[in-house]
Image (cartoon, rainbow, N blue to C red; front, side):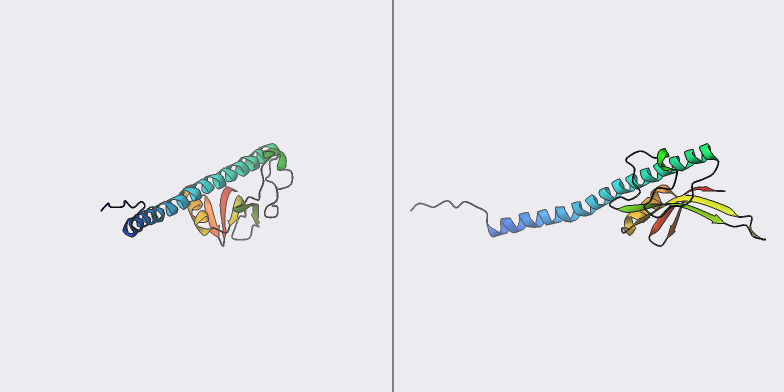
Amino acid sequence: MTRRRRSGFTFIELLVSMTIVGILASVAIPKYRDVKRMALSAQLIGDFDVVRNAALTFYVDSSYFPREASMGQTPRNMGRYLPETFEFTKQHWRLDYEHIVIRPSRWFAGLDIVGISARTTDPDLRDFTMKRLGPGTTVRYGSKVMYVISAL
């Protein structure tokens, strides 16, 4: 009597290999999300720096900061200080140039705050970006994170 050789895997072998693949995927997917979030955060910080440099260059040329613009819009007269392909609206965030004027009063000398804020639907991206920028340079309010350029 000859034994017939079976080809293929047994059920146990398939179950063990699927379990190993599942364990590897459960480790890899969160790491992928973290790496993607780090890359997006670096892009957002780069956008903050581009707008900061443009605003400071504008200030050096004209002795005042540009007035505030709507969210996702380039402030008036600041477009020539930005790269040609720069956009305030990206897939994961929208930038907003902020120029907040707090008027002087009897108890307060007044304050001009200039910054760039980003609104994102990903709270982890917002928190991670704030953590990377460090304390003292960012303010968080609602779903926005504001990177302060100047407070005069």
